[in-house]
Image 1 (cartoon, rainbow, N blue to C red):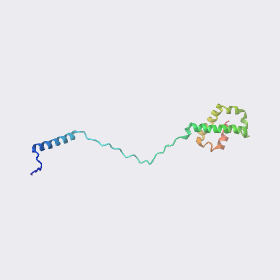
Image 2: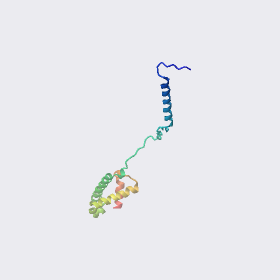
Image 3: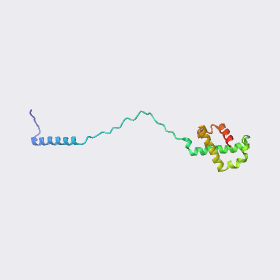
Image 4: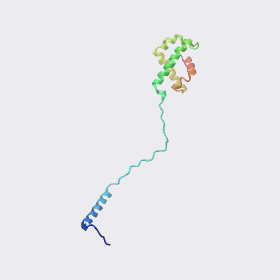
Length: 134
């Protein structure tokens, strides 16, 4: 086998270069293997929806309590069914009366499973409940 070179490089330098490349290859072989990071495919879940729990919203509870507090005072003054609670109107007009109405509504929500934002829709049901509990 004959090797012909068109460039005038001495054979000694050529042999030295091949030995250097072999040494670098040996050094690379002695290095620890390089690992590729593998990220597994995520499971097939189209989407996850997370909703805010409105029942825990303090402002909604205050608003609904204020609404029914005003309604109870109006019912006591105008409705014949609530007329028997006329002596309690001073208590219901106070802050303690608002807290009492809030606790009644909270117990109603807990027992019935109706959400706070649905209380205004179930107007008659709550009216009967408050009539029995006052």
